[in-house]
Length: 516
Image 1 (cartoon, rainbow, N blue to C red):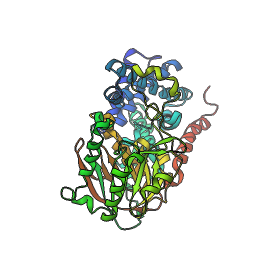
Image 2: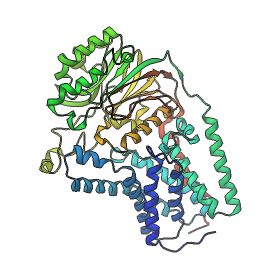
Image 3: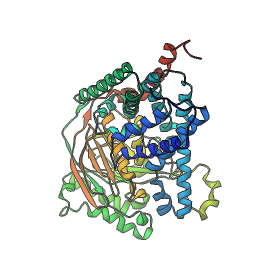
Image 4: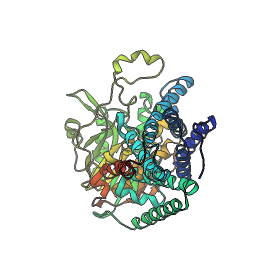
């Protein structure tokens, strides 16, 4: 058994910082998956030391600083290059974001300190994994949530991914955390504890391999041939009025029958988020009506990202509009029929609390004229003969929100514009979590983005068709509508969260009267 000091050294904090930063390498685009276990194992190992609560909190926070600095530094691109802030202010804002997000790890440190007197094996196999999972869950919804860098996403290509249709991504996070505890126990535990740890590793692995053979959903009709248009419109030109015609033409060019014949023979063609860089009402005559005519002649439905303006309520929505035989542009503009608006808005981007009181910041960073309104209407649209669950931008990061509209919807659609983070690792991370949504729901996910990563993802979370980033291209292929419901669609997080709470209660019951 290893022995530990009564308090932490500066090296321990440095080790925690580096471990947190290295965990970011387990996510896309690096995909060094074993680091998910190893990095967390370092945090667990350090938390076996006897230390005051303040040090345990600091240790967890430092680990979080490393994680978010390594995995979410891409917000600098949006703030500096497209938000107008100079490099120093942008760097300061990123630092502030990292330091604040790392505060969520204080929950881990504090809860772990409540179980300081438990045996090592209970800490590593019950308490630490459960507390880590609960910390991720809290981060995913508190103050609108930031469900990025959830540990389970790193396992989208491993045997643990097969648990996602049952437990969701949080359940996979718990299994990774359990694996980290197993690794530590194999080093510090007694022979009996090492055997238990080894058995758990084998059981969870075999369980994942077995679950991978189960098909939770079934085809609900003939495959659809679909096309996603990736216009590769520069973010620096996207909102400039002088480039409006050229920006829209970039997408119209991708529908040219001679250059892209696959688009014309598609059942469904999808333009990405705000591909139409203005209000649908302003583009009715020169864009929407011609597109409606094209869709009817080609017998293909269209989904077009843009802004829907509710004249009566004076509200603006980041939206998707459906065009085709089942919809009429004039009616849609008046009644919002065939329109989906974004329900989960990006704080301090699409809406800013107390915006009218913050206008003094205009000389530092560009602020929007007004807030985007939260959509309260339908989350599914009938296109290509199938009900499809819509999402805009990072809405597909929220697993429990995406199951709304299921199992009625047979397919998932996500339109996004990761051009805000051009050249960074964010687009790859976003595509990775989109794959998790497809796996959790047992549905194909059609993903159209401005400059990548656009893709057709199947019900197992595998990328079937994709295209290169930062290139104007039409991505075409077959997608199968699916029926049925995975356990996660039926229960959401109501399975994994009570299970995690039970993991904390069980050791207290078993050890009642044996400590304190």
